[in-house]
Every structure is written in C-alpha cells, then in structure tokens.
Amino acid sequence: MRMMKAFRLPLIVLVLLAIPAASQAQIAVGVSIRVGPPALPVYVQPVCPAPGYIWTPGYWAYGPDGYYWVPGTWVMAPAVGVLWTPGYWGWGGGVYLWHAGYWGPHVGFYGGINYGFGYGGVGFAGGEWRGGVFNYNRSVTNVNVTVIHNTYNQTVINSNTTTVNRASFNGGTGGTTAQPTAAEQAAAREQHVQPTTAQMQHEHAASTNRAQLASVNHGQPAVAASAKAGVFSGRGVVPASKTASSIRPTTANHASMNRPGGNNTSSVNNNRNDRPPNAMNRGTTTSRPNTMPSGNANNVKITQNTAHPNTSRSTVPHSNRPPAPQHQSAPHPNNKPEHNKPERP
Image (cartoon, rainbow, N blue to C red):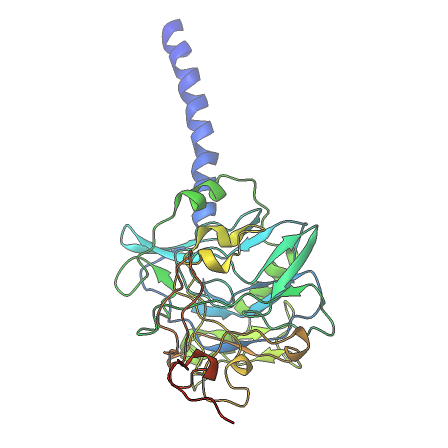
C-alpha cells in the first residue's frame, strides 16, 4: 500500500506539470480553422508618422463571425534593437493554425508570406537599427524625409516577375511552400517580446468593426492600413485597392535581411521588387533603380500585392560583378565603339 502511494504521488505531479505545458502550446499556436483565410488585399502604405515607428503588416484574424482584416500599421518599437516577426496561418493536421507574431532581435519564420513593404517572405528589408536608432530603407517604406532623417536607399531587386503571390497562409492547397531556415529556427529560440498594448488594441478594434469582416468586404476591407494603431478613420487611413498598381511587393529570400548590417545589395539573391511608384515613373517610361536624393522621397506611396508585375528587371546581379545594364534600347553614347569613326574638324 505504501508503495502504491509512493508511485501515485510522482504520477500526479507529472500530470499537473503537463497541463500548463499543453496550455502554453495551445496559446503559442492560437486558433485552428478548417477554412483558409482570403488572399492578401492590395493597398498602399501610409506615411510613417514619426521616428522610431516600425511597420507591422496587415493580416487576416479569426473571430466568432469569421475572418476579419487587421489593418497594417506603424507601431512604436517596444525596445531598441528589436524587429517584428509577423504572424501567419499555417496548414497542418487538416486545419489552419495561427502562429502569433512577436518582437525579437532577429526576424524569424513567418511562413514565407509576402506581406510587402520589406516583409517579402524571409527577413525584413524595410530598415535596420544603427547605433540605437532605427533607420528606414525608403526604397520599400513610405517616409517623409523632412520629418525622418534616419534613412538610406537600398534598391530591392526582383528576379521573378512572372507570377504574383498573394497567398495569406503556408502549406495546403494554394499556400506558400516555405520552410524555416537555420537562421529562422535560431531566431525562434531567442528571447521574444509579445505584441505591444497598442497592437492588441488595434486587433481588438478591427474585431469589433463589421466592415472589416471578410464576409462583408469580400476581401476588400475599407480600412486596409492605418498610419497609427487603433485609428480607423481620418487622415492616414487607406482602403484596399480594387485596381492594381505596377509595383509588386517585396519577395525577399535572404536570411541576413533581419539584422543590422545585413542589408547588402550585392548579396541579395532573392525575388524582391518593392520600389515606390515615383521611383519608376519620374518623367520617363523606363524603370531604374531608386537612386534619387533623399529630398525627393517626401510623399512616396508604396503599394503591396499587385496584379501587374514589373518586368523591367529579370535577373539578379552576381555578387562578384556590378549589375548588368537594365535598358539596352537607349545606351549611353560613351558605350558605343568609336574606333572607325573619323574625327570631326
């Protein structure tokens, strides 16, 4: 009898320990649904309101009335040096599971979902921390350089312009097929910071707005993005676009994009193209990398998830040589051979 009691006590302890572990696993994964979320809507990015804000892309959340759109928004970073890893839906075990986003020193796996504006599926190319200050890559983010001076301009190159992927989930029919890289797995084991209070309030506001329901807006939410969390009307609020732009969102596939100093154009070997429209249509019909001075980027609008990919760049430059000329139809006169041309008097 004493032996039986001695055996039962450790067993009860193990059961009690297993209960909170299972609960934590359920919270980490989130809800599970048998119907996949709609495609990501097309929208332009509102201008960054002030220094220190980091873009968090919009996503489809699920509530008692089905899927509803949580607008993309600018959020003040909770600490210096942290970046946002977006949440994503993943197919597994016959259901769609929601994997919540988090803040951390590196961007982890978010399903290979192309959220745009620097979140192209792997890492983040929209900015980086330098000396305790967040610097914005204005090639892919909408910043007013008269207000925000910590900017740089790194051209994002797209080598796949034949398809547009607006999938909002990983795995299953029609979803992305990305798997976590070694760097993303390492990022998942780092210490994380949960979504801020502003982010939680932002999602709650979306859940109580019936216009955000997919069953109401049919995948075209009236509030697709907002300049500040929780603001669903007025200046800085943009709707989903019913007509697509000529700019595709980011499709990054480079693990080093999520850490300071890792944004090196020569090392990019991925599918990305998210330059602002005015970088392509400034008095010319050709498309060129965005090399304009910072004063020309005051009111750039960046567009996400479009249906008309840009076909002006079809290759990625080799890391050991400069990029090839993009437009052969109008070469510079200095590029023409002059050996047989007679000298003019």
